[in-house]
Length: 331
Ligand code: GLU
Image 1 (cartoon, helix red, strand yellow):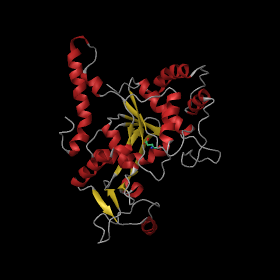
Image 2 (cartoon, rainbow, N blue to C red):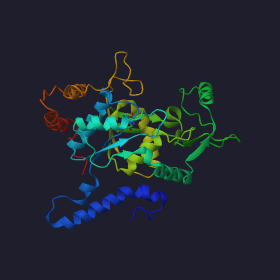
Image 3 (cartoon, rainbow, N blue to C red):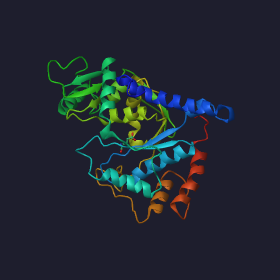
Image 4 (cartoon, rainbow, N blue to C red):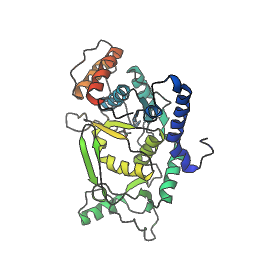
C-alpha cells in the first residue's frame, strides 16, 4: 500500500494506514472486546529524540524519563528516534552509546529505532508538499545580513525579517524557508500552561533546508513526529519556544497537532542548560539508580528509595499517572 501511494501520500497516509490496520484487527475481535476502534486510533504514542552530539547527561535523562513514564502511564507506545541529521555536530559512536545506556536503564523503544539519516525521501516529500502550497521559498540572506536587518527593524536577533519572502532579487538562494502564517499561535502545555508567540515578530520564517544542504532540525523533527503518529511530545523546556512554529508546520502538513509537556531543564553550576555538545558531564554509569533518583526528584517528586532499576520504574509509573495522566483525554 505504502509503495504505491503518491509522494506525499505515503507520508500522510502512515497514520491513517495504521489506524485502518488497527480497525481491521479490532473488527476481528469485535464481539469479545471491550475496546472501541477509537481507543486504538487515539492510542498514546510518545517519543524520545536525542541528537547524537554527545553522551546522555542528566538533562537528557529527564527527557527520556518523562517521555517514557508518560507513555507507560497512558498505556501507550514509546519510540526512540536518533536525530542524526547534522554530521558536523554528530559524534561517531554517540548514538550507539545513547542506546546502550538507555538499555541499561531498562528503556527500549517499543518499535524499531528511527534514524533520521535514513529519512531523506520523507523530508524531500514534505518539502514538495510545502512547495505545492506556496509555503516554501529560497532565501539568499547570510546570517550577518539577517542580524543587520533585525537591528534596523527592532526585531530580536536571529528572527528572520522576511527579506526574501517575495524573491531573492536575483541573488542565488542558499537556504529554503517555510513561510509562517502572519499570526499569533498559542497552545496549552500540560505543565507550563498557555504559551503563545507572534510568529512573524518572535519566530520568523523557519529554515527547512540549510545553506550547507543539510536538513534543518525543525523539518526532520516534525516530519518524523507526524510519520510516527506521535500524539504526545514530552521534552525539555528549552524547546517550548520552538513549539508554535512547529505547530504551524504540522498544520501546513495537514496533520493533527500533538499535546505537549515541557519539562524543567537541568542547569549546571553556571545556571546554563546542560548540553551534550558543550560536554555536559555524562551520567554516572556506576550509579544509574542514583541518576534515576536525581532526575525523579528534579521533576518534583519525593525520592523513591528503590533498590533496583526495575523497582524504581514500577514505583514511578503509578505516581506519574496520578500527577500527569488523570485527564481521560486519550480515548
Ligand atoms: N533532538 C533534540 C535534542 O536532542 C530534541 C528534539 C525534540 O525532542 O523535539 O535536544
